[in-house]
Length: 365
Image (cartoon, rainbow, N blue to C red; front, side):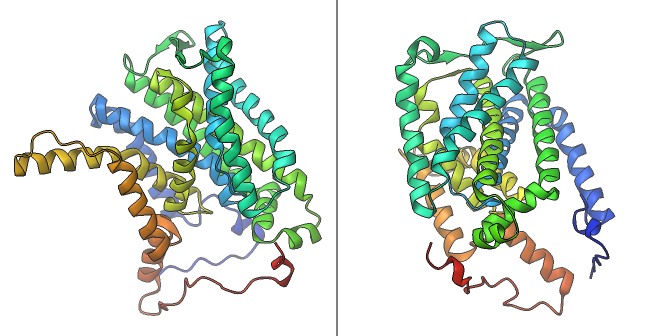
């Protein structure tokens, strides 16, 4: 049994709760750095895909998981980041400048969009962001001189300080690039949640009335959250475009927005860990389904069998199971298992039961 005693405010905002936790995270870091020597090019590409999804998940987690604002339109901002990065690269801007600039452009546009949209609440906010995702596909087609329209664009070759990086030619270097971006975003995200601004995000999520009573500017803080979220998602979109090599308006459709939202729900809302757990499921689910299908085909001599929509169907079943049996997601289940062993035999069954009461000030929303 482990007891963590907090004796000051500094103990509450430490990066690691205790030294064993720091050790395990460092061990995990060593493992992910060593993956290019442990995996072949195919599975290394899948690991890179997972990291890109994790970056996008962290971006949406800032807004939905920690600020409590539901968005079903973040595929539009992934598209903006992707197209901005590639257009800058095609015009001779070095990657080391184009990549962060694409994220900055996406963040600024996100703030502009947020000012009118975030005055809505609940289902109305979700519908408004969903409309943004739908409109973005038409905007990409209309802006054909820049975006290539229906034909789309192809990611050009790029280099960093003279080192050429290509998703297919140098998969290990592209993996390290993606890993580096992931670690930078993770570090910034973790420190953001320790800062007063991050605490304000959580206060708005728990109760806007209470947050306003404590002096939090609701509109400004929501807009900042939306901007930060869009900037991170824009960087994920930039990497996704380079990873895919070629893309068009169908790459960033409404399904991607919904998939991104469901990913953080399954992973665990309100936790950075949830973005990574959800990314693992999203990234490896298609491969697991393909390998299972091929295995069953070989066992029963069915030949090549393709079932349209099977990935969406399996993902929907997984989501329904989590909503019904584990609303806290994968990370919530892990926390319950860990707490059970830490407190055994004093663990109470109803310890993680959801609170059904709510503030009277929130009843009219």
